[in-house]
Length: 123
Image 1 (tube, rainbow, N blue to C red):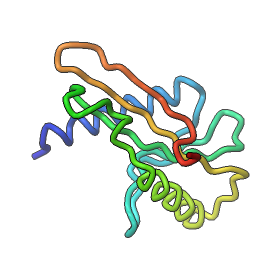
Image 2 (cartoon, one colour; image 1 turned 60 degrees about the horizontal axis):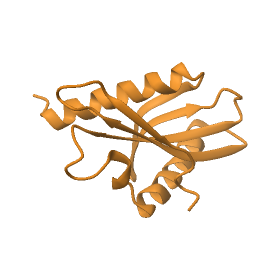
Image 3 (cartoon, one colour; image 1 turned 180 degrees about the vertical axis):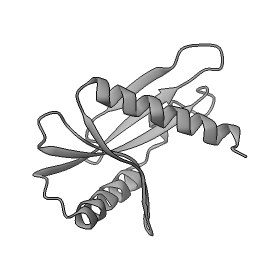
Image 4 (tube, rainbow, N blue to C red; image 1 turned 90 degrees about the vertical axis):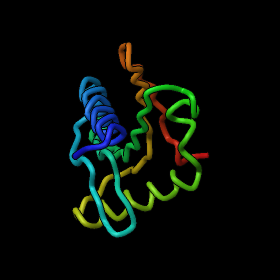
């Protein structure tokens, strides 16, 4: 049985994928896993030149901070390494790899709010 936080995360990832696709991005993988960790979404920008590893953070409220505030520099660096592993496994040769994040705030009584951060691995 799925826990409420798992269901919220799944819904958030679904909404984040829709958000990217609405902007012309092509989602090529979801919940990709390897020994080192997991990537929520792997997508390609509309120009086809940049492969983007997307971390999705979903919350039902801001009691513990906004969704994107929970992503640390170490997490962004780890996602970059995972992106490199993904590219090797799939034998891809994108000109660029970037790590972005989508925050999904989904209050129990309202519409979801999305926040987007580009290049979180470029501190």
